[in-house]
Length: 49
Image (cartoon, rainbow, N blue to C red; front, side, top):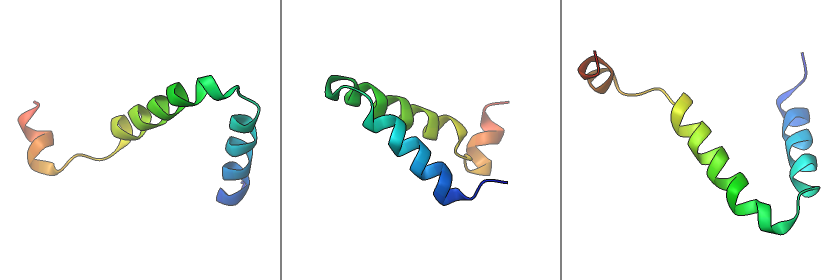
């Protein structure tokens, strides 16, 4: 299994290859991904059902 540090380095290396004008979109993408996979509080999760 690849360590967390190596994943971080690979992600940052990929980002370094992108033109600066893409960075706002990458930031939005990462933010959206983070929100979508974050665990919701139990009460909020139950209300959705």
